[in-house]
Image 1 (spheres, helix red, strand yellow):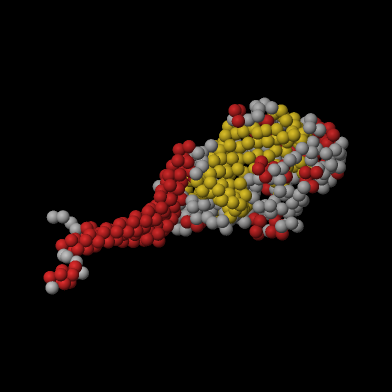
Image 2 (cartoon, rainbow, N blue to C red):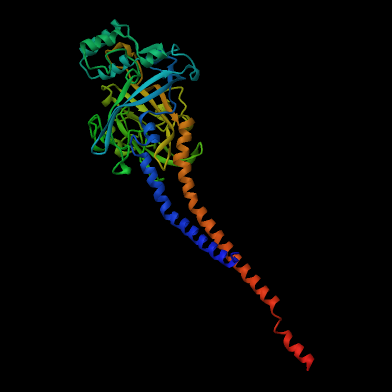
Length: 491
């Protein structure tokens, strides 16, 4: 039996209404489903194969590029002239990070230690680790400033000690020795007779504490009970706050451990994190939106107030004693050594700092640091953290090795830690956490559009059937207007 077009039209109309209604429901329910899937995926849970593996063992290439400020005029500096430096680098190291001692706790936190290893990458570097550079000798110039207010006799003994061990104000060593340590009779002497004065008991090097070491015991929230707390630090080495600084605010341990953040970020969100290397919490701010390898991201950068002094930015008063804006005094967590950290080449710092050193040229592109993050998941796509290590040096009475050095905050090295998601990890992340949620989002509009098209088709079919029926009636029955004419003709 043939089905009439009117019944087909009714069936299509019903189908269209159901389809459009389903799409409309998805408009309201779809985002909830998507958000629920994101919540399940970003929680720190071994069952989450994607994000848990990214959290546990960083599966993407991560590199540390080191640049030395090679001193060109060490003799002239001892006579009071301005330091003249040239940048040497990068010397690039592949960085491997792995979390160990992972322990989940009943209060929805997890503790771990993250270990770091560095392997030199000759093909990415300007030279070998055997390259020789000249930098300030921290053992001499740092100790001299630390001894400035000590009694005359102590300063005299210290100067004699430096002379005995042939330690001068400037040090010429290979890149490898400066990075990972060199044998020093002075270090052995100080560790024997003044234990605890130096941060190391073995070889002395700028990064000797970093290789094959961990960043301390972190305890962070898993997000199981509240996804807004995921990755946020509950404690570090058992501490809820540190005691390096002079104010409660500056001693706070805020944000995450600096690798992932809670999901569902907006342009009003910030990126707070605690850095054991800087001994403090830092916070990045939103700069702009963009796309990285097909994935929408928010770029977060360091605010100009990050290393501002207490005069220019009162909340930073707790980090003082301060000098010019743009440098952070970290002596309180570096065995009282007169060490400062800053952006490379004193970028975003008081311009006067660059007037005392010849050879610096800061630019935003090369020396700012940023994190590109996928706002829906809180997972970084591209990271570039750049920091500079500086030594405050000056002439110190009765320590002859300091000569007539003018007071200066002297750049020694700067380094960039950089990584970005690529390859299979990027593909998996893109499909599961970008494509599928986006597809589900578009499905709601597809259903609505399809439903409307089907309803329009049903209406057109109905009108067509009605018109066809009318035409059939006309063909079967003569026109009512012709009947009277025929009757007149007969009459």
